[in-house]
Image 1 (cartoon, helix red, strand yellow):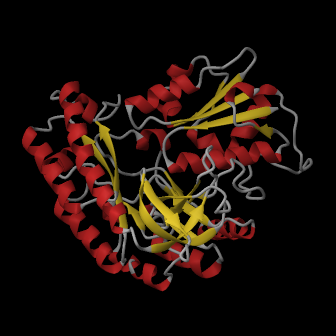
Image 2 (tube, helix red, strand yellow):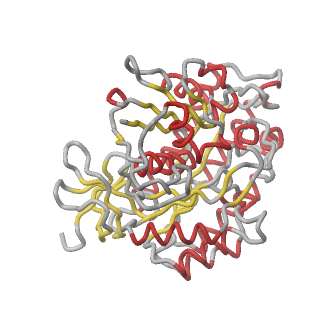
Image 3 (cartoon, helix red, strand yellow):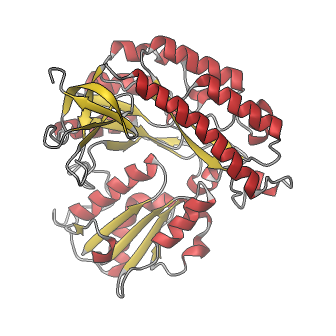
Length: 423
């Protein structure tokens, strides 16, 4: 059976798709990059915005006669009626059993590892089967918060953390298989361990002390979860804990933050960023921002833009608010019109693009280790710094899945052009 997996949305979905791919590979099925060649199309859907939902529906259309379609993920959880053409919808709670459920539904043969193999097992015998350079490790799922714009609580249920021992074992195996960098993922990775009497800082310490993984990166963190005593970990494990924090702001206006039901003020957010930058040299701080939230006035938008400009993010995802059925924000009468949202999106994007450009320019003349990924079709080598900067180098000069020191000589496209330190 030829299987294609299409992943939409967040890094947590990417981590889960890697596990799903592994299940099919271990059961003896072939993974293919071209969806049109697949006998079975698996779509891991996203519902964070209206556009994400639309892309999820479109991705779930069979591409040829006889192709079977399995859908899972957040959008199929909250809007299953939109996937009537799918042959199987797998609930989020059953996602780790997707391969075995598909085998039961379609009578698939497989089990390459013998009768004792369970396709739903949490295994890491073949990490990175989707041909990625970085591994995504799921440490947490679900959410106990009630942000007024978000469907995550409905789609993924209550917050729950993976056992720390299991995570350590998974990372150990990934390191043994040659993985150079892993990303800790979750709906709210910063809340890891609250249900287990531990926290994310203690997990990071265990992973870097007990495994040989060269580089560890954190995924999106909520400001209220980030503890100041975690900052010393970057000093203790210098070079291994990536100097990149993605902290979701959503708005720089305090009144909008209150309507969003976010548990911090802009001043508190700024204080977190300032403390992190003071402790971690060359730290890259990236964020998410929503424009056009219901009731957002010109003054509130201006306050948000001004705050974002002062903070100076190294990158940002800008979203125009889209009402998600079932959320409090969707029921607010004072919705911002489309033209206004587009104008505000453009203004906010200009500010964040300028600050990102300044961050890239500040790195010219420096040298940092770069994890090299798959070359582009034109042969140009491409990779990532621990500060999450895209780096380019001459064709044939860098080997995939290696970390080498590179000297940045100029800004290039969305990143930096590199030469060897002696070049």
